[in-house]
Structure formats: C-alpha cells, structure tokens
Amino acid sequence: MRLLKNPSFLALVALLCATALVGLPKVSTLKDKFKDKNQQLNALSSEIESLRLGQRIQAAQLSRQNASYKSQRKRDNILNPVFQITGDSAVGSAVLVKHVVTEDESYYLALSCYHVIRDILEEQGGTEIESVFEQNREQALFLNSTMVAHDAQVDLALLRIDTELDLGRVASLAPRTRAKVIDTFTEIYTVGCPLGTPVQATSGEISREDWTMEDEDYWMVSTPAYFGNSGGGVFLAETCELIGIFSKIYTHGTYQPQVITHMGLAVPIDVIHDWLDEIGFDLSKR
Image (cartoon, rainbow, N blue to C red; front, side, top):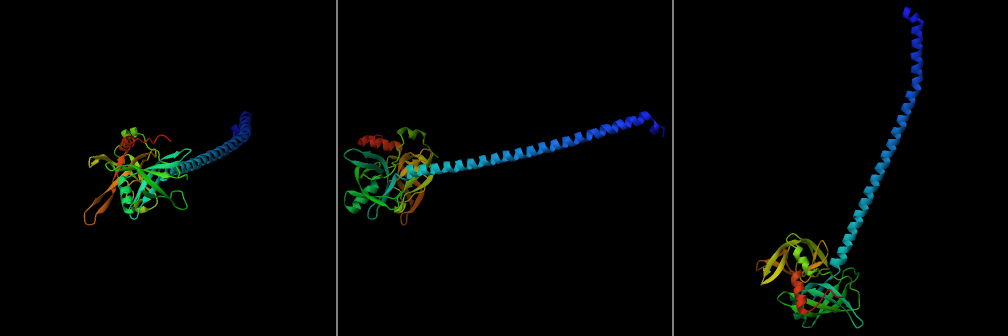
C-alpha cells in the first residue's frame, strides 16, 4: 500500500504506461509494413511464375517448330527423291541423284538396282521404264526413263529421265569418306515403294557392315522392307544423305518362302562411288 502511494513509484508507472502507449503505433506501423512487403513478395512470386510459364510455353513452341522443321527436312531430302519404277508385274524403286539443265536439254539421273530394271525390260520387251512420281503431288506423274549404265555384279543401274518439269529435290549423295564413320548401330532410313505402294520410309540401323554375298560387299540393315523396296535409297538419319541403295532381302523356306523384313542388304556408299567413277559419271557437278 505504501508503494502505491509513493510518488516516485507512481511516476515510474506513468512513464512506463506512456512509453507503452507511444510504442503501440510503431508496432502497428511495422505490421502494416510487413503486410505490404509480404504482398509485394507474393506479387513478385506470381510474376516470376508467370514468366517461367511463358518460357515453358515458348520452349514448347520452339520444340514443335524444330520438330516440324526436321520433319519437313526429312520429307524434302529423303522422301521426295525416291520414286516408283514399274512394269507389267515387276516393281521397284529409284532415287533421283542429279538434275541437269542446259540450253539444249533438261534431264534427271537416278540410281536403282540393275535386277529391277532387267525384270521390267524383260517383261515389256522395250527400252523404256515407267517412272511414277507421287510425293507432294495431288495426282501421280508418269514419266518414261531409260537405262544409261548398269552393272549386274554390283546390282546398280543409272536411269535418265528427260523432262523440263520440276521433280523436286534430288538426293544428296554422301561423300566416299562417310563410309569411315558408318558402323553397326548407325541409324538409317530405308525409303522405297514396297509392293508398288507410294513412297514410304522405315527407320532402323546398320546391322552388319561387313556382309558379303557372291563376292560383293553389302550392308545388312534392320529397316523393315519388302519386295518393291529394291532400288530405293538408304539414308543416314543424322544428315539425310544418301548412303546406299537397297538391293536384296532375305527369305526363308523353299515351298512358301517367308520374307525376313529386317534382313535387307544395301549397296554401300563406297561401292556406289567406285562404280560411278568406273563409268565416268560425276554426280557432284550440276
């Protein structure tokens, strides 16, 4: 009781109360500032998340554009050069490899397999081979081609198509040195016209790079193929370059032979270059 009546004590209590009352607005102000900062941080976080979402959307769009570009590049470089050659019942494929335009003439050169050309010409008894171009066309275009060189041993033939029409992009023949970097498991596309269908591609790999048949060197490929693929192109997946000509496919059995679709044989790029050098054709010059 005496303490409560003590003037000094009462003065101290009054001072403490006054100090507390003065500090209340400061605490309230700090709370308001903290609330404002928290709101700013939330707004900044939302903005950052929005930017990240925008970046993900842009990345997805670029990825789709890149995929579309790669798809278009493949269509132009590995589908467009390949076309169908056909006879009465024999059917095969060929690959445009050169376009020549001068003041006097306009023509294309194409690689194929000799055995396909032989069968077609034997059926028809003539010198012209019907060539069918369907890629990127609403209606099929039928042109005649003639064989200007062949080699039964390596199963290669060179066709000439005289026309002033634009047949689209020709295949880019890989340089001879490309054979040094191609080995087992190299990814490839085989493009042709199996059973006389429009041009189509199948993907796979080089299964064996050292396959020999009848003293000739071949690559074995795992890309599914069928009758009609012969003469079509084998393209390096990484560069879309022509690295081989599909030649043969294995069958099993004699009474009703079954086609082994993943055991095809292709003429390798170095053999193609050797043959072209031998017959005096330079496909690098336009």
